[in-house]
Image 1 (cartoon, rainbow over the protein chains, first blue to last red):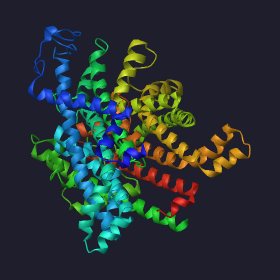
Image 2: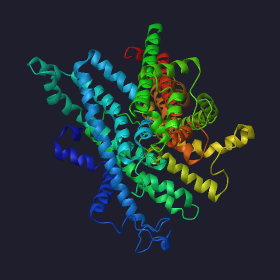
Image 3: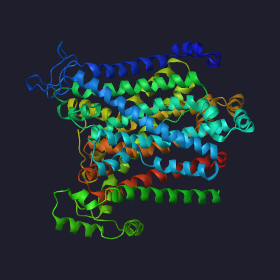
Image 4: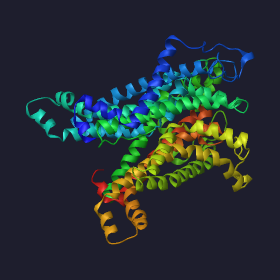
Length: 288
Length: 315
């Protein structure tokens, strides 16, 4: 395996393909993305097509996964829910990556009081769990998907700042970093040319994990009514609605939960596989 | 050690101060007029004016912040405008549910995770290991509130063993009260146990390769004894760090779980305070949650330093 890691790209790829976690994770994540993409151009039904006479039906040719308490097509709503989850994950992770990695890199390059400030600042933000910062934002600006995404993104900033800072500090201790400074490159140039490419694997793995954390957090917020607002479908809100009717129709409570669990499982396995293959020594924090 | 402690306490206090400022800015300065936010735009002018006076909104923000923090330090809190009782009383009543719930969940999670993690580590690469790691992956992927809903469906609705929601109160007897907390505590504990089992496995595996473990084995100690007294003690540090972190996730998780099971705890109080825009309650409860997280992290740092002086240098 260690030979694979140090070899060229094709070697790395075959290493990945022989890693069972990576393959399962990639397939599950692929299905999630596929469902979301297809929902952009086609869904079996309209997501808000109400048909009270056909409420809580079992799977059929017309409704592959049956209908909910308003007679709406569950498969359609799950597909659009996938789109919703992916959008939340992408935006929240991007916010965390851009702001967090930037702060972490600056902290590691400058050291001294800048480093202390970033580390302590991360501690403060870290004291607000995602759901608590989301509640703070919702209390002022009202519930909604955008506010939920911003809250989860803010929660991601200290996570990436810590990971980037830790990895970058290690990289700065290596000879190539000092050599870069010695030939007259600026700290910023060394960071761009050497530090960032070197810590990229850690960041990719952490991004995969935070994507999963974001999906879980959005589902919880939507369940509480603080995330995506009805009638727009979201997996978390579907579970909330199901609680009233699940004694009559258990599938209402089972299907959206399965969707969340498969999405999160896929991303976590993908992250595991990437970590083992990109660098077996890597350890990433899993927080959520 | 004393200097280290003093430094850590200072950091703790500064962190709390910055966090309280952040809460104050978000809840009382960003909205502009907090009274208008609470009552909505259809409110009568005199009602608004009365609430502004009651909340002290006619005073400068800096003074209001100092009054809030000063009040908390001296033990007097604001009056909730929806419940019309002091916030400290509201929180106090609800803590008697949330703290036991979080502690039971933490206990369950540790009880499940440590034996599983050690079992997996001693069977590295064998079916037992894969089984535990598979359980752990699935446990991490299941949202706690979905697990809660499924457990209600199976154990309350179908089998009728547990109440589906609500809490009888401690006055109804310890047995009945604990019985109502079984499903919520398991729902909170499962994802945390899944993470802790992984950490335990990794940590034990790291320690199993150490020289002193080989020495202990070589001098003829029983493998079981080596595992429990030599390995586990040294593997404990990363585990304590994670358990400490998990306490804050349990508190955050209790917000959702208390809503699922309609339990009258701190988490549900936050949720209600948001729906009713009770900012006076909200700022105190959120600061309380943040303070709990910060204090537990502080205790974890001190505990790991006490167990292993090597970590002090990196502080």
